[in-house]
Image (cartoon, rainbow, N blue to C red):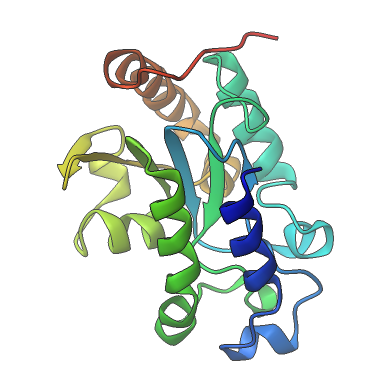
Amino acid sequence: MNTTFEQLKQHCMGCRDCALCETRHNVVFGVGNPTAEVLFIGEGPGENEDLQGEPFVGRAGKLLDTMLEAVGLSRKHNIYIANMVKCRPPQNRDPLPEEQAACRKWLDAQIRALSPKIVVCLGRIAAFKFISEDFKVTKQHGQFIEKDGVLYMGMFHPAAILRNPNQKPLAFADFVALRDKIQEVCEHTEFCFE
């Protein structure tokens, strides 16, 4: 991890800017390659993430990893994964607007440090913030929208796919479209098939 990114992480670990810091076990800063050209953004850590300090490590994370690996992507090699908020909302509720606002500086700093060419919004919360406030994941998933030279794509959240398995083929098609777009626009992303 480069020095600037590591310093950012260390500063974030001590954050007490909203009430979520009172109930967290760990700050979930993010995971992946800090030179990645592709950034995945979820809404916030769940119970497993809070306990382990890493995003997407529960059942939804296992599904995400499986779909990533199927198209040659990996959190260890060629993507970075972060969340809108870095601390778990109680009972895994949606992060409140004031919690998102308090945490936004950390995510913005991660985005500046990474300078991703593609940002994938996992679920409606991230898609609302980064793509459009009227974004409909069920209708607009898999579409690329360009903003300020960055391509944004909304996808089904892996937890939503676990709740509604008939969305899995649509979700996988989005991963294939993502792989194709990476091949088109990302110069330094090497695929890895393990």
